[in-house]
Image 1 (cartoon, rainbow, N blue to C red):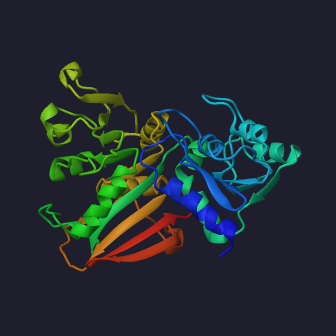
Image 2: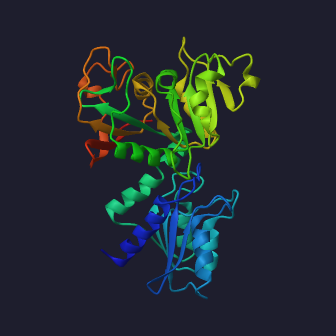
Image 3: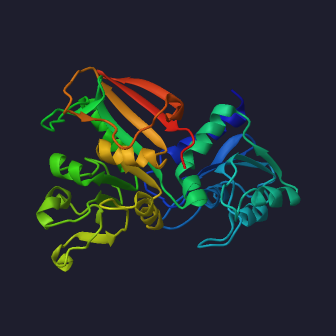
Amino acid sequence: MSEKNTVFIKALELAENLTESVSPRPPVGSIITHNGKIVGKGVTTINPLRHAEVNALSKAKEKIQSFKESTLYCTLEPCFHKGNTEPCVDKIIESGIKNVIIGSVDPNPKVNKKSINKLKKNNINVELVGNTELKKRSDKLIEPFKMYIENSLPFVTAKMAISLDGKIATKTGDSKWISSEKSREIVQDIRSKSDAIIIGSKTLEIDKPSLNARNRNLQPKIKAIIKSRPKNISQFESLLKDNLSEIIVYCKEIPHDYKNWNGISFVEIKGPGSKLDLASILKDLASRGCINVLMEGGGKLLGSLIDLNLVSKVILFISPMLIGGESSTDSIGGDGIEFISQSKKLADIEVKIVESDIMVTGTIKDHV
């Protein structure tokens, strides 16, 4: 592997292993080399709010006086516009760096290729990473950000634990535990990296989940529950055991005594009949900075989201067991399709063995 690719992998790893949520901004990693040696590393930070390139430049300035022989690696095109911070592209130009290697072009119209063109106009050599796998890793980092920018929607990942015959619970509703202990630990990691977790009323009633990320420093910002007509606060006791996340209930009617429901916020959402408009719920979450949402609801909610093309990614834990029973709970409900040609196809599929389970991950083609 070339030296450039080796360094770029390190920049990717910085972004992939962020220890804080930076949503709704994308996670970015940046590295500066000088005469072949790494002199500065940086990631996007919230406190203080600084971009990866600026952090890398700051570190490099502690070691070198001139950047003329330096190369800046960045997983995402540097920002072009002035927002809460000064444009990174100007900082790079001011530094005197003559070589920049970029992973992904920024999908934001305020930036898209503008920084690349400005760097080139200032006699800076700009390369887009050529390795296909490294480009994929860069693009994967900004999937939620891209979804938010292009659709004002979050990137929704559906997590399921199912039996070999596609069941998520027995005829009595028992589901503890279908997946292995190791699989459930992986889910805690996924939760910790999600901005919000969303479930439906049936999952709340039967499973009584906490929706936290156990023994993790990072926690989801929001626990979101879809419940048309919440009746009393006792329905939400399992979610109130900690105050690590905000709790939002999306409903048709806000309870008249909602001011007494300490720790719970309500958002009224319209929709056809008894249903709520799921796209409106997701847009509301995105407006609150939640661009990476984990769906842990049951088959009914998942099926409805899939019918509307609102699910972007699937993480499936398949356990080597058979549950059977016509009245047992199926993994996906909703209206479904009439023809196989209408089925949702997965791309970028990864398959792993996790103890006795099979973990399948893939993105849904042609999602919103």
